Length: 151
Image 1: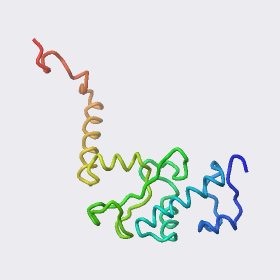
Image 2 (image 1 turned 180 degrees about the horizontal axis):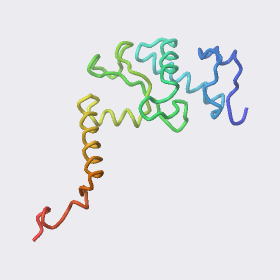
Image 3 (image 1 turned 90 degrees about the horizontal axis):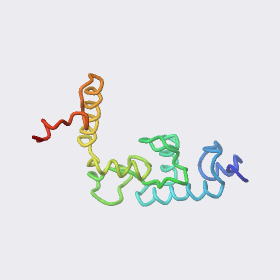
Image 4 (image 1 turned 120 degrees about the vertical axis):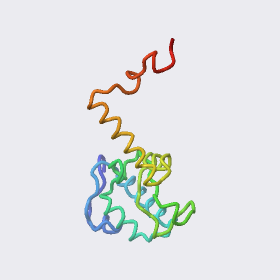
């Protein structure tokens, strides 16, 4: 089938999706491969296929951070888990938070994968937005010879 995957109730039910289509944009072969990939990734984190389907449905088949489609062939998808719980490369069914795209996973890692790290990002964005709205110069417009050590 060109331009979409078969929407037969039997095929979807066999994948554990209850006969409800997820997307019209991907080939049937890609969809089945990606679905199997999710199940395999979940198994490495001690999730059953049913738990994987539950997570995917709960997330609306989207990355909960950037809202991109998890079945998009241009995105690498990873299992996100709380490293503080198991302190392992692979988590367990308790500390798995969900499926997210690799770029969002990298961003979480850059900010320490902590609420404190994300809070600093929020504070930075909030502070600069408020300064801009007040008309205060920030960034390059705030630099003058006087405040950067010029003569």
